Image 1 (tube, rainbow, N blue to C red):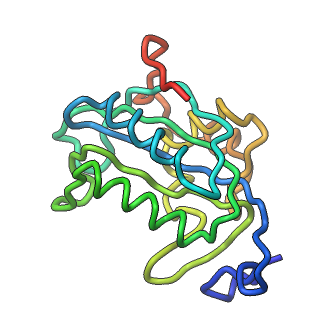
Image 2 (cartoon, one colour; image 1 turned 45 degrees about the vertical axis):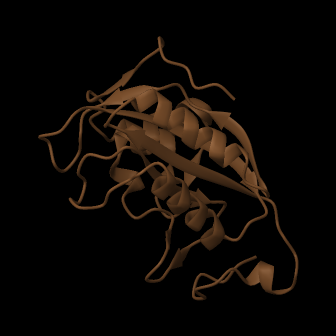
Length: 183
């Protein structure tokens, strides 16, 4: 069990590596969006200590925040991992960097965006990482695909994902059955 007041993964200090469920949200709205999503999933799959257990359908979504930009393609990836939360986030950032993610405009267009949404029941906050993701409960483009993959999903501190989705406007989230991410 972890202590939310600590800013590090207590379990890894003892040499133990607990297996935890992990939720990632991926999005792209520049270039070949499907190719960026597929490549990011492939790179996550190749990460030692991280085993992908599910990938949602692809959803086309309206931009949030900065509205004057192309629509996104979004997916959620579920995994099990023995990695420390910070290592999983560092891996996501490394994949973004490798796929030429440019961070010039907050909520602006991007080749790939990989957010670490939740790691089991971890509650963690420091200058590098916040778990669960601080805005996940407000984002239909995260919650709708997550709910598809796991109807019993729960976001720590916020409640059941199904209840969170019920309270959001989901009109900007459209499932694209013609697009499929391969595992």
